[in-house]
Image (cartoon, rainbow, N blue to C red; front, side, top):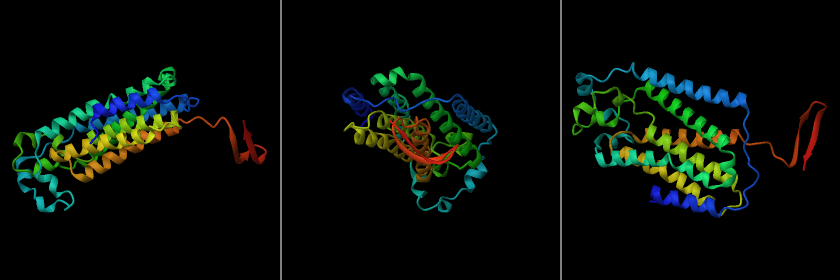
Length: 263
């Protein structure tokens, strides 16, 4: 599997070789930006506040849990316990934070750093908000709470009740798919676009698998986190696309139905 370091290098090469970027495709509208930032920040702050209200499992509740009651597709995770996989997932998450920085290799991105930075902040705030709110509202016990081999102190925390969705997976997906989407829009003729998209898909996939092997998440946690992060990573830049500067459109104007030609 493509390592994060190799992907980082490939992204830099892709941006260096991608000449002839189109006119910058994104724009800001202050009402929209403030609304998205406020929504993401509010959800994130509320989720982290509610996290303090989660009571850890008691020893009696742990003893009453039965692996046989876990959905059969998720049951395998209850037998996993791998510290090295947990450390790897942490390293992948920290490394994924650097992935959007590769966009700075493009001149047009550096000139529009405020626009890209605003979109990235909105993406990550919303992702953190939706992820944390889902965790604290559903309060699903992690797979490790079913595993007799896992250290008891790791089961008796409020974090042990925040399995759904996988935050590591959703965050890496948001970061990597955001980068791929912006690259895709900036360089429509680049032959590197399939490589960038493949790398964006691989990073959260590797992260999620590591979380599964560590006993931290069920497969359904990982799939949901992947979908959430990837959706936001693509959706937020798409919401900021500027109107086309040329072409034609058919729609309703103040005078009625009309055909508009822009060149």
